[in-house]
Length: 436
Ligand SMILES: Cc1cc2nc3c(=O)[nH]c(=O)nc-3n(C[C@H](O)[C@H](O)[C@H](O)COP(=O)(O)OP(=O)(O)OC[C@H]3O[C@@H](n4cnc5c(N)ncnc54)[C@H](O)[C@@H]3O)c2cc1C
Image (cartoon, rainbow, N blue to C red; front, side, top):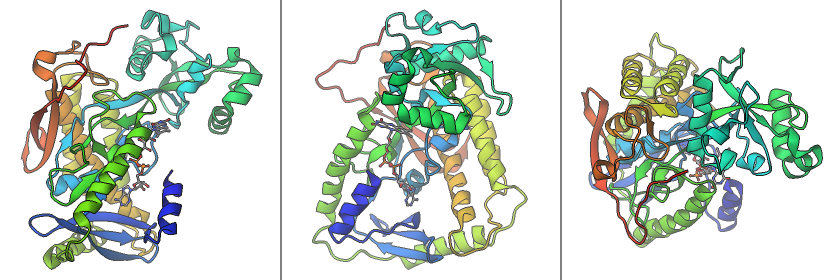
């Protein structure tokens, strides 16, 4: 889809800047008026003047140790807006997909279970019957993920000695070799390449992996954030069609529908307006932050160790099941990582400096992790993908509302996050609790 979009844009005569990472938004005091970017190909900073900016920069999956998401899912786009004053909405609702391949996290699609794949614990038991007697492996992602985690926690999982991850098995052998080769050829190829296992012969090691963020930048039905001149669409945004738990396939629909709506709205605001102002002081401050502060910065903490620690803290404290204690422990870990001197870059190459972009991504991941944890601690109920062991019931009387997280320069016990809430708009369908 990205390549098709790019081809089409080029065909229409739109400039497409492929090797460019946006590192800050510019504001004229009233509205967003441009962006500063790092041009990897030419090894220089670029300034973009803009009367409207749309962020479509994806989610935050890389903040967890094992994820189905690409390396780009580091929240850096969302944090540009968050830093500029936009709110994040419902960040506690993180979707874990039940069947990520171990140890890579690469997704084994639900199609494998829909075509007859079954989940087995170390006793060889098809355990989903105890959790969702009718839907079994085809229960929703949160239900299957919780079942797998329960099996692993109660000692009925397997252990991958190399990675240290627990897992259960996804058995496709009963489907039959011909059907697997015809209908699940991609899955088979991935499994063979990444685990050396041919799924027509042996079960695959799987476990829940971070897959999708229901939360994101708080936008209205037209994709507008609370910051003038700034829109967001796709996984980076939270237009809230997914509530606390996305159903498979809805993200593509969301990207297509709100990509179009948001694009049209932003264009409507941009067309016919005069040139955007360029706040020179901000550009200079940004250059100083990146060039003097990070590119030529010094520090004893390795940013890649920080990235690993963020992922481990989130995996431990904000995984499929959560408790206040675990979430607070993760918050403490994230806060101490934020305070460490990791914001420096050892590689001083100008072109294709992934060290520089990685450091910026770690900073974004830390901020996003803090927002996820802060919202998750506050929501003292279980809803959708947010499962609190200490508050196992859904509580519509107190929690039928959206969480909002705003960046706060002032640090509180939850970090640099100020919480807020907004009502859930209920129209035709009354919300009801899901039962199995
Ligand atoms: C393995 C997998 C399978 C999935 N399967 C399905 C499915 O079957 N059906 C479904 O509906 N959904 C599915 N999803 C979810 C869906 O694919 C994503 O939610 C969706 O692709 C998000 O699209 P997007 O345009 O918002 O972001 P993306 O497609 O991720 O695009 C974001 C882009 O922003 C760029 N970017 C990020 N930061 C910056 C920056 N600072 N400067 C410049 N560029 C930046 C990135 O490089 C990237 O190109 C799946 C997700 C995964 C990971």
